[in-house]
Image (cartoon, rainbow, N blue to C red):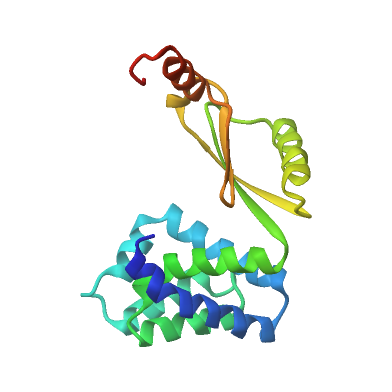
Amino acid sequence: MNSKSNKIAKPYADAFLEITKDAGSLDATIHDLNCISTALSESQDLEKAIQNPLISVAAKKDIIKSVFSGNVGSSTVKFMMVLCDRGRIEYLDSISRLALELAYKQASIEVAYVTSSTEMSSSQQEALVEKLKKMTGAGQIKLEVTVNDELIGGFTVQVGSQIVDTSIQNQLKQLSAHLGASSI
């Protein structure tokens, strides 16, 4: 997220959380934000449509209603209608990501961004969650797992500003630095 979209997204993310706090539970808000993020990440057509300046506001509203009505709360749909009216719907992805981050903080949930060399089994993820809970003192940990073949082996974890890098690629870099060789 670049600084301009972050600057624009912050007040809208804060406003969204205020509106939905009055309308229902924090769990419902988190669910709605996850639905929005998932829909935008899985459908490039949806993202292109809401960002296209040639598509009218009314058409964008119809698209949003058809995609999200019944999947998210009515206050969330109304909020997206306001974004359309104000010409800010193209920042929906940034707004929803930032609002989700803030909602997780309110719910005392830490998000751990994990990059692994291979798919992690559910038992591996559970073990990692338990270790991260002990490491951070958080009540709940939500894993955001991505796979990167370039790591060769191992994984990296980022929770807040803490980074744990157990990848073979990192170990090779450390070894080459120790031996005085150029980095890999």
